[in-house]
Structures are given as structure tokens and as C-alpha cells.
Image (cartoon, rainbow, N blue to C red; front, side):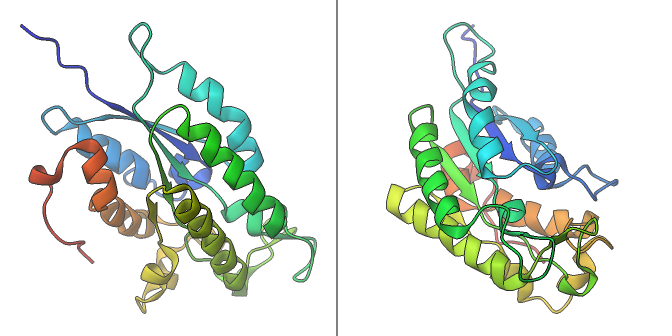
Length: 225
């Protein structure tokens, strides 16, 4: 009997990957992990989010996180999904303060991270989610603003196009629904259970991810709203 070794996907990111705000199902990433676990030869997913992480911290974690999750000797994970950037765009101290990581530094660091990650495994990148400016600042310190989120998601897309890495934009798709504010926690930045479900539906139907997972015949269909 031939041993079937499932492919493995490392998901690196922040509280969105952790699933913070979704006490029902544990977040979009946990929902995807459970969904794949129920499929014949579905990939193994490792959600490796850390609350508050930005680009620099994710980059610092990358080699160790990927290197220790091969499961079998001399194996490495077959894919890396990056979900980062929301914390980097937050302004510190006041609404016109400096971002936690300025746009030029973010783009340069992202370009370096994509180069480093691609040397380890195929890479995919996820876009950013909306914020509610009316309840800022977060933790009496950080100002999250939609124009900043939009700007940093554009930088994510720019770097991915340059590196020929699949990118799934989220912001405008979520904002296009009149109910989007109802998908956020009272803190204005974390998705609630419905928000995580919305992201999950988009991610699990993402053609680039389905192609990587070799699941196209099993998951044909449109995104449910």
C-alpha cells in the first residue's frame, strides 16, 4: 500500500490568522483547516498567527516556522500563505501619526520576504480587511484608517505582481457589501464570526489556492454571500 503524504500549507500572519473575534468557529483559517481535513487527501494546514505581528515579525519567524513543520525527515511544507499588513498600516499616537511601518519600508520588506519565502516553497498572499474608523483609536494608541488599509493592500498587490506571486485582494470585495460594518468586532479592527466566514468563503474558493491544493474538481462553485 502506497503511503499518501498530504501537502502542507503554512499560514503566517497576525490575529486574523489566529481567528481572534470568532468564538463560534475559530476564524477563517481554522474553518479552512477543518474543511480540508474532511476532504480525501486534503492538505494539512498550519495556522501560525501571532496577535499584533507585522511584516518584520512575520519575516523573522519565517525560517523557523517553515523549517520545523515537514513532519517527515528531509521534508518541508509545500506552500506558504502570508496574511500580513494590517498592523503595519496603523498610525501611532494620533490620527496623523507615523505608521508602525512606513509604506516604503513595508514595500521593501515585503519584496525581501517574498524572495525569502519563495526560496522555501510556493507562496500565496492574502489582502487586508476593513476597519471602522469611528471607534479609533485601538487600545488608546493605534489609529486604523481605511485609506491606509487601501494603500497597504495596494503595496501587497504591487509586490506580488512584481514577484509573480498569487494575490487575493479582500478589501474592496468586503466593502462592497452594505453590511460590512456588521462583520467587525466592537474594537473596529478584528473580524467577528460573520466576518471570518466571509473571508473563509473567499479564500476557500480562490482559484490560485485550489490549484495549489489540487482540489478544483472537489470545490467548484461560486463564493456564497
